[in-house]
View: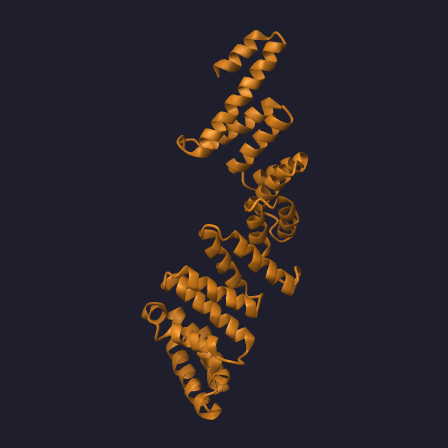
Length: 299
């Protein structure tokens, strides 16, 4: 039955799906006879047939008697290959997420897949995406990512690095998030969002020069990051009292947001530019440069 299963998988890989279904169904039938119905002996065949049905789409992925039932048989098999069982739970998670529209069940399946094998990158990414779409799930996300890293080691897997850092920052755990972002950026060197996240953590922990470097790196990678511009404007104006640089940065953010005048980011940028101009006018007034002060106020 193993030879039939392997041949069916080859058919699947080469696009001969009908032949794949026939071979894998025959492998299951033969394994049931030879193994006396032991689920562990045929779990891989069920998983493979479930994957073939899933790839066919339509009713084969949506009707539970096709892909779903075989993935369920593979996932529920006792004493089966952990790799097969983990992949089967990941497949069930995809079914619940994409077909069943049941995020909670999908998360349970992805979590189970990761408990069996934390290296299951697809399950990890999908679990993180599902949690990020829901409110108040950052703590669960942190636990899943931390567990995977603790179990496998930070050099073995990469999928938890970025979501862990982002979740820690969103939870306000900035001191913990800084090394998490640093680890993530060793892998995702050109991720502007990670550089922004590192920047806000540095800012919140009063490491302003490091924050400026991080935000500027985010802008080097993606020149339209209004969040980085606003944060730089805030640091220049509120911390270093470099109001001209603050004004330039807020105006740059406003230019990027042209046509979005009702958005909160536009209004924050507008307020920041106004505050910078007011601060500049006060300085000019104290110096006796009344014309320059008046010009700033008129702007």
